[in-house]
Amino acid sequence: MKQETIDRLKSTVRNIPDFPIKGIQFKDLTTTLKDPEALALIADELTALYADKGVTKVAGIESRGFIGGAILAARLGAGFVPVRKPGKLPATTLKKSYNKEYGVDTIEVHQDAITGDDIVLLHDDLLATGGTMKAAIELINEMHPKKVYVNFICELDDLHGRDMFPADIEVTSLFSF
Ligand code: AMP
Image (cartoon, rainbow, N blue to C red; front, side, top):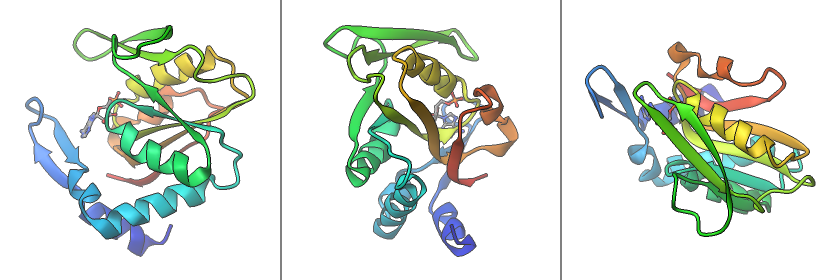
């Protein structure tokens, strides 16, 4: 991606200090999404990254990963799979619990959402510590897809979240702070 495009996208992100708790610099992407040009750039750039990878399913992580994930799925001609918080999905699910800074969280996916023939692109809006995506990778791998890719719109470099993921998984983000 051109540096000019990266700078343009980064300029649309709003930093909110001390949200949701003291000490967190929250990167608010709603200001990116409401900017028509930035939204179109994100759709185009994400599509360009994965256009030739044979992706059959995009799995988006609740809830901010649903936005880019669904756009990307439609653009790639792939299906969309929601990875959700507990108790939201109606049919039989697979679950994965993982440790957060305070307490334990769980994510779920429908057990028939992905098959061994799928090439899966896991998508979320932002990579922070990587805990959520690590759990999502493990969850998706229980369905034994052919391949898993991981993508974010934005990555927080200082937290080194991508070090949490298996070394053989390709990870991309459009821009970082
Ligand atoms: P993590 O598991 O730490 O990588 O982050 C989980 C989710 O929390 C990400 O999908 C983000 O949507 C959100 N998140 C965490 N930290 C931030 C932050 N500093 N700014 C914006 N969103 C964040």
